[in-house]
Length: 199
Image (cartoon, rainbow, N blue to C red):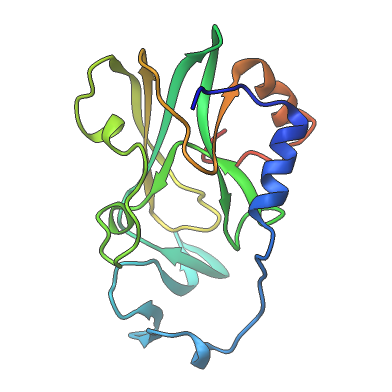
């Protein structure tokens, strides 16, 4: 199927469709499957997710806050290509409890090692090969490591990789080629549509 560039209205419809049927409800700690308290932290039995920890002192400052502790460095990859003659970025519609409005657009790949290595038996990560192996017709534009959401995570980093593909890359379900010309409008007029990781 030939890639087509979306409009702002079609991007909005994509988010609405993505969160259809998705709901969030509060539950008790005891209802969390495979999660339990261990050494003062709330952990998953696989040790492949983040831990919830309470912090009373941080860098000599008194605080009272719950942090996510996940020493694994997250990976964010953004794929760029020319679609209909315009520079475009491959983004994905993601539905997660922490997202503003539940559904937002994230980068092409947004994953921790536990996820893309499928330690929990999940599905394979689309487009991962563009960032972790050589693909003819593609080139790495830049790569960096940054701190990840310091108000929520403690001492966590994320690796950012930006790759240009000079070949046809078909967008899979829930993935969209966002033209560069729409980035300002989506970032300013619809500030909650694009995740921080994609911005």
